[in-house]
Length: 228
Length: 228
Ligand SMILES: N[C@@H](CCC(=O)N[C@@H](CS)C(=O)NCC(=O)O)C(=O)O
Ligand SMILES: N[C@@H](CCC(=O)N[C@@H](CS)C(=O)NCC(=O)O)C(=O)O
Image 1 (cartoon, rainbow over the protein chains, first blue to last red):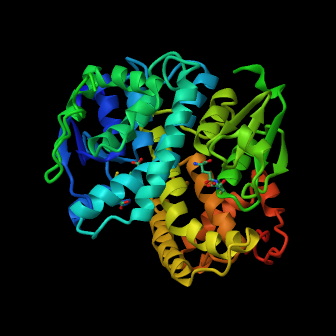
Image 2: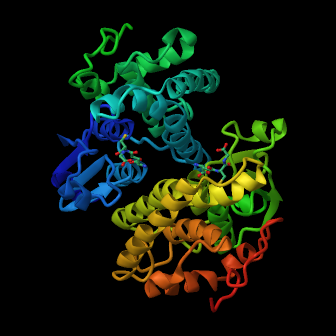
Image 3: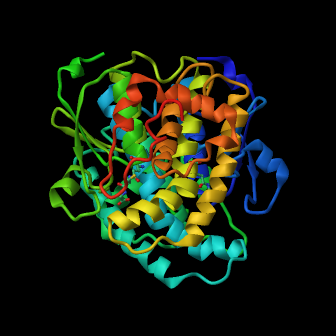
């Protein structure tokens, strides 16, 4: 392990960005202190674009370097700060974690989060007009399939990718917690998934996420409640 | 390293799928023998869906397990067969490879490949009607920006992520080679990028990709030509 702990970490993020949340959870679980800087990434800002040519958040500043792409950032954090581990030891178990991270970052995000959060929040915040109800309906339908899939996984394991907490749980919780902020998760659909979320939610690493506030979108009462 | 070489590898793929190509390149570079099975993934096929609940290709069968998600598969291959390495040693260099893999898998794919290949090939093959010219135009515009970005990177390094060939080069070449099959890459835009592609193209690992044929879309002459 290198002495990067001495370097100062700064995260450019947005409260309801699932990819930012995944990185925040990893940092917090590994007790890496970080300064959070909110970035209204849709406003043209050349300074921000210079930090990340992809123009996306999150961007993690480590010393003088600006790191983008949340999956690559989380692997990097795992390598510079292996404790506590968020990836297991064996190649097979590591594969399963990464598969599920891909599942939530790619499939869940495009089928669910971008449809619900994108229509209900981002359009309003960014001034993009009214939600498209076809998208909202498609997202609301797709989340059911995803919750059932999570329940099926969690019937066989303590956590999503195996018997230990991993990046896969953070990738999933990052998406679901954003949707929970806008009350788009039906926790009654699966007791198993609800129990899993209750376990994640009560971790110290989750505190900063439960404290998030988005102007114009008051936090619903159940959101930060550990007994939701 | 485990004795997975003894296990038989089978890859369910589609010739013009960039994510399949990325995995094929990794397998070939590491000299892992694989049986290729073409999967017409858009046709409802419950057997295929059982192998991968995401319903996406590529899927790699290793022994009795079915592995999906190309990025997770490539990391797995790196762990079970580290030679020749497609990820460098230091955490910083590994980060840069993974960032660029994410760049090509996510940003390039959505901005360019899905727009050009999706409209011109997939719609025709899958019977989805005529190409949407707005998408084609957007893809043709975006690829210029991406080629310029690659040229900028390659002005500082021998390969995309550093001075060694890595997964980042395969992720990029996987996307570009699919587009080259439909003559959508303007190799005159950058001598640097063209040289890079010529180097990749001449590797033994690339041979199977240059031999790909898609019924209804004859291979253009330059596609498999090493002196394009
Ligand atoms: N693959 C990227 C995706 C990040 C991403 O899509 N971020 C969104 C906010 S949640 C964004 O910045 N979108 C702006 C854009 O796409 O231009 C990652 O994992 O970091
Ligand atoms: N994140 C996946 C993406 C794979 C992917 O999008 N594959 C396309 C073909 S290139 C596919 O199977 N699409 C079918 C679908 O999205 O249902 C990976 O990297 O393996």
